[in-house]
Amino acid sequence: MKTLEDYLSGEVLLIDKPLNWTSFQVVNKLRWEIRQAFKIKKIKVGHAGTLDPLATGLLVICTGKMTKQIDTFQGQIKEYTGTIVLGSTTPSYDLESEINETFPIDHINEVLIYKTTEQFIGEIQQFPPVFSALKKDGKRLYEFARAGEHVDIPSRTINISEFEITKIDTSTALSTGSIHIDFRVVCSKGTYIRSLANDFGKALNSGGHLSALRRTKIGAFNVKNANSIEGFIDSLSSN
Image (cartoon, rainbow, N blue to C red):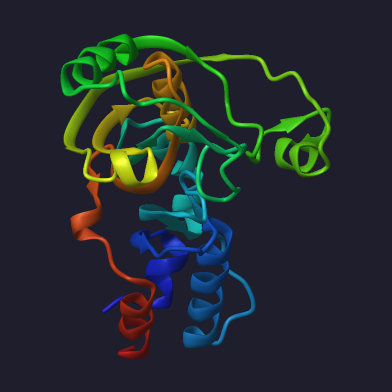
C-alpha cells in the first residue's frame, strides 16, 4: 500500500493508456486522484513520452521527485506493435483524418513486403507528421495543418533496430483495395510510427497509413506490468 510520502518522494507508475485518451489527460486524471486520496493541494506528476490519442499502451508516469528522471526514461528504446493499411494515405498518417488518396496494390506481394522492411533498419532520416505536437516558430505543427497552412519540416535522424512483419492480411484486397500488415518495431526516441507507415507505403510504390498502434515497452518497462487507470484509482481507494 502506497503512502503520500511514497508519491512525494517519487513513484514510477506504469499505466496502460486507453484509446482516445491524450497522455496529458491521463496525467491530469492521476494527479487529481492522488490529490483527492491524500487531501493535498498539489503534487508533481508527469509522463515520460507522449502517446497519440489513437494509440494505446504503455505510459510511464512519474510522481514527486521522480519527475526529475523523465528525460532519462524518454531517451530509452521503445517497442510498438500495430497495423499499417496499404493502398491509401491520410493527411495525419493515421485515422485522425480521412483518406485523401488511394494507390494500386496489385504489384505488392509478401516477398516485396518483407524485403522492403530492410530499408528501414538502422539509422534513417524521417520527417515528422504535420499533424504532430512538435513546435515550429512557437506554434504546434498540427495548428498549421488544421489551418491548411504549408510548413517546411526538417527531417530527423532516428534508429530502428527491429522491424518485424507479424501478419499480412490480403483478404480485403479485392473488396477494399487494401492490404493490412501487422508489425512490431523497436526504435529510438523521436521515432514517429505514423511516419514509418507513410514511408513504408511509399517504399512499396503505393500508399500507407497507420490504423492501430500500441506501445509495449519503454526500456525495461513492459505494458504487461502496467495498470489500467481504473486499477490505479482502486489501489488509491484501498488507502
